[in-house]
Length: 68
Image (tube, rainbow, N blue to C red; front, side, top):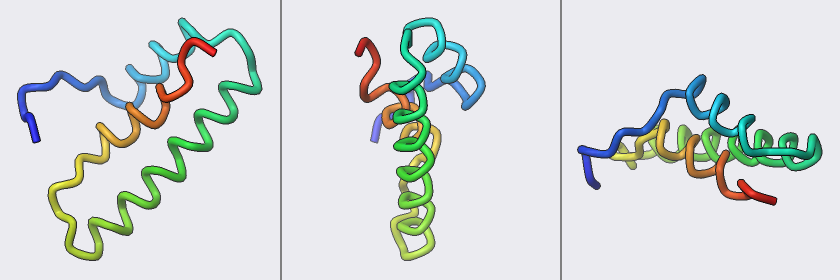
């Protein structure tokens, strides 16, 4: 995994997200997906997948429908 990526923290991601998302239903969906993705990633980390970066999981899952 590339360690030189500059991933914004959760607050930074939400700020970027809200700048581009126009519809509340898309926002609710993306936040739900991000929450569930982080939950799954935490469970994976608990079961030996120690190299999972939760910040990256949150960012990419939050942004997955950006622009809709």
